[in-house]
Every structure is written in C-alpha cells, then in structure tokens.
Image (cartoon, rainbow, N blue to C red; front, top):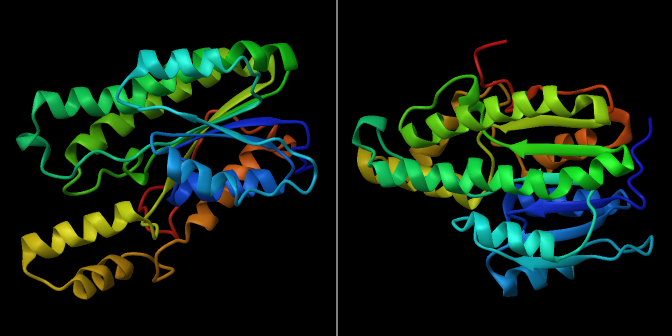
Length: 259
C-alpha cells in the first residue's frame, strides 16, 4: 500500500490544535511538506517546530482569519506555492437550538466554513490539475448523517459543505483529484470540552455526568483521540486512496445510527 507523501505539498487549515494539528503531524510523518494555516502566529510557530522533517521536508505557515475569505484567498495565492493536498478544517459554530439562531450566526458560519473552503479549493485546484494529483479533504461532522441536538447552525452549515463537496468531487474526478469528507464523532478537543461544559451549565449536571452520558452513546464507550481522526485524513490524502471519491467517512466509534 502506497502511503508515501514525499514531495507532496499539503495545506492544512485550523492546524494549531486538535484534529488539524494531528493531521498536519501525520501528513508530515508520511513525508509531506506542510503549510499550516490559522490565525494565531505564536501557536503556528509552536506546531511548526513539532513537525517531522526527517526526510528533508520544508514546512511553513500562513496567518489567516477564516472570517475573511478574500484575505484568506489573497494570502494563499500570494504564497506562490503549488499544493497537492488541502485539508479544510476550522472551528465549529456556537451551539444552541436552530430556531433561536440569528441570521448573523448563519452568515458567519457559512463564511467560515463554505466560503473559505471554496476560495481555498479555487486557489489550489489549478496546481492539482497540473500535477495530476489532488486530495481535498473536509473535516465536517457526523451531523451530516444525523443532526446533533443543540447544534442547529452547525447541522445546517455542515450539510451545505457536504453537498458542495460531493458536487466538487463529481466535477474534479477526471483530473485525478478526489474530494472527500471526514466526519469526526465526539473527539477529545477543546471544541468537545466547550460542548460538554455548555451542557453541564444548562442541565445542572456535572461535567463528568455529561461526559459519561455522551460516551455511553458510543459503542466504543469513549471519545476519539485527534490522532485517530488524523489517521483517516492521512489515508485519504495518500496515493492508496486514489479511487475513493465523493464520500462521507464517519470516524465516530460507531455512534452514528445510519449506514
């Protein structure tokens, strides 16, 4: 099985923590040159120092805010670098019932997730076509298959991203470019801690009680490690996954009820 990413350039978004950071580290360990993207430069520098460079890889970073698609596009294009792999990943919208959501919340989430994914794809696809190799992997959520209670805006926008992704996969497949979605379940990240704390505050239950109740919904009876999600991302980015295109891959320990 060919998992070698030597001489491949990967653009990894939201890569200063959690799944994004774990994905960047895994891709680097497979030989890829990594360009980290996030808004906190100090954290970017810290992650950069942790990336494997044993095969002579050249890693760098770009400071960008995913609330500003035009600036993001300008910075990626201004880097004057070709990319073979794009990992679309950014923080999830705030929780709450969908009925209570404001229009600004929908617009903000749409900008951060779909618009930014789109401008990034437009920036990297030309060089992918030229290379005859492209992997676009979107980190979304299992809510694409089964909406999650209390995450109304997220459920809505994640579904839009999944349909954008499937459409893109249909359009780009002939060029050797695949577009797939990884759907993490409950994963040990700051985002999960935020969700658990919010539930605890609203219900009056302890953080431990909320956490245990969430784990009980997972056949594996535990939360995922970010590295476990990154393993799926890394495989889809590899040459071995060349004929996997346009799919949603839940990595959730079996929690999602649908097939």
